[in-house]
Length: 415
Image 1: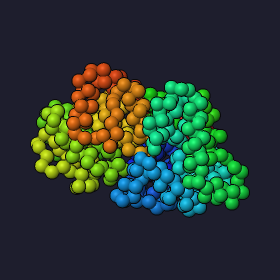
Image 2: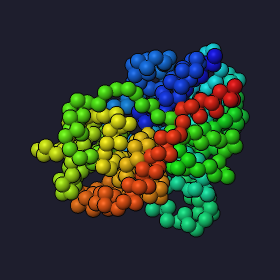
Image 3: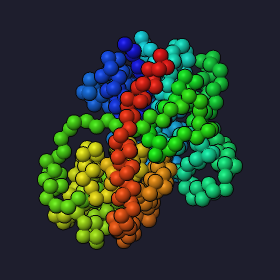
Image 4: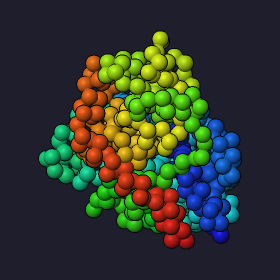
């Protein structure tokens, strides 16, 4: 029996893959210990897992903060430079405390204290990434969130990726200066930039997504394995009001901004409702716990609801319109339904680019998200059978993957 510490930080989209892994570990008789934002403690304990709080103590429902971190230009900098890096000592101490009696530590891309804790405690550790963006491969160069237009240079070859990477490293180096300084204070040798090669482990690295979203590249770290998405699909009931709506007519359009971008929705839901009405389509709006997101005077063909289990709702959709977070993207791919991706920040533009390249959807950036344009994009998605056929094929392949099982097998092999 192994005691495995799963360190993660961020939104529900960051947490849920580790809960799926925790469930698999527990089913095999091991002891998973989840360390994350204190806000998640009731959820994690309710699932029957041990929990340890991990600083910085960020509230994932802080609407003002979420609006800042979803900014396409500065969102990633705010997370790293203002939230995570300054709290590196606290984070490190929390992971060390959570790792008492542990056999293995598993890190998230920005739990910078996890590798240091593993090294100081002389424990093996496995690094995980949730989206292809984290690898920054020059052979499969991602869409950079604050300069998505640079992707047009991709066809010129790997040298463009190397040039952009050089510029990115120069820009982000000050963000993680406290992390490098703290590592040196512990007497640990340099391990590379924490945002790039420094996040990866010599023991093993797991890409927690489908090969369809990102395939292995020759410049990925050694000992990297693509596992497939670890889906955390809880057996929770669909809201009764939503079930009745779904049963009453044809498959609706489903509009969602996940658990983070929903706090910075702007006019997304108003324009979505107008587009659905223009197309004479039924629609479901997942508006979060934000009454201001609900459009006024919705017709009976459109329902607004806080949230719903994506694994149950998405397969019943005509199309899924979403923000491109990797968790939502994975569920949309799994559903086998075509997509329209409206990326905001972080990995979302890159995930959107990959969805488009898979032939299962289209991309529309928030600044261009007005009803007439939304209706045009959705008309293309809904009337071109190629999108539906390709999405169905992708859905069957993703549903056949065993992400959590593969991830746990790889983790235990390190032991």
